[in-house]
Amino acid sequence: MTDESASENEAGAAGGFEELLGSGGKVDRDALYRLHEAREEDDAPVTVWFELNRDLQKRLDRYLVDRIPFMSRTALQRLIDEDAVRVNDRLPKASTRLRQGDVVRVVLPPPPSNEIPPEDIPLDVIFEDDDLIVLNKQPDIIVHPARAMKSGTIVNALSWRFRHQTSGSLSTVGEEFARPGIVHRLDRFTTGVMVAAKSDTAHWRLGHQFQNRTVDKRYLAVVHGEVRLDEDLVDLPLGRHPRIFDRYAVRHDESGKQARTIYRVRERYEGYTLVELELLTGRTHQIRIHLAETGHPIVGDDYYGGRRISRGNVIPRGGDRPDRTRDEPLMARQALHAARLEFDHPISGERVVFDAPPWSDMGELIRVLRDHRSPVSVDVPNTLVPIDPPPA
Image 1 (cartoon, rainbow, N blue to C red):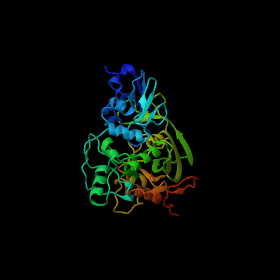
Image 2: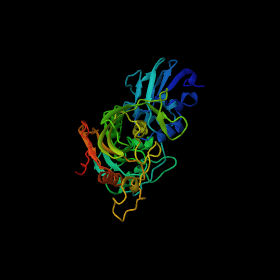
Image 3: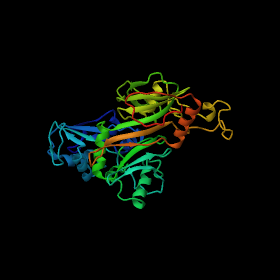
Image 4: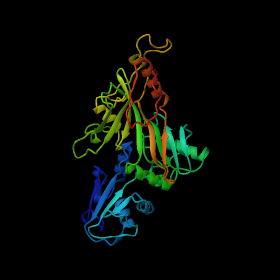
């Protein structure tokens, strides 16, 4: 074997991502792709490390080409320039020479995907400039192409918008790493505020903010039951479900990663509660699992104990207009909405805030609850999401 063989290096992955490393201590492209596809909202960095067991006298960028063979040398140099690589916990240059005992840590973006065709899909745009675009994501759409779905995504829609309606493009970071321009995700049936990058600098700087937890993310959810405490912190580690492939669960073993959510009650109704959620970490399905663990799963979230409800479940007999059937569904998805996103603009440095009202289905659910389930407004400090007051 060559001087980059596994016998001459130790390798590992932080955060329970050991499956990323294949033969010879190289990063496995397919394993990395599967991991990024499954993680959805999780914004924790995927990090691998390598420790040199002998003096290679090789440049850092050339060494990384051997360890991460599906990325070009240019792409790896960009990672180094954007502070995604450290050697002995210091920021190196691409030309840094590696020696015995050096520890190299790399934050890995998703691997390349196929070319993404533009598609004319309507978008609710909150803000756009030369460097970023902020959307109120609609329900029932995934953010970026995956192996099973190459079209009908937010990325396809953004590509069309920049070509035919506005100007610019998704960041070229995406041309190398897939998920072009996508800094974070919302899952398919979650609506609300999300930001995408139109320039490379914006992409990397926004990514650092998400990784460093300096982004304030607030959600609204309607849950089953009347939540007793006005405010509480849910601090339960999460990891992959031990038996069900596409689900996550509370894990108190080595695979569990820290996950912390603050909920604050905004309105109580008979049998339901509207809560505002502040994410202190960003794990896949974090809000959904944490609320289910409190005994209050999200309405419509049949993955994690919620139930889909019809008008007849909420409205007393005779309480609705005659032209509405009691079997009409109120929510065909989980009642979860990313309502507010606050971060530093990656170019100007100005602190910016974007609010997005709930989509019509969730707005209608809240209206019906207010009309028929004795709403009680709750005044809890540190709530930020604007909501209409309940009727008197």
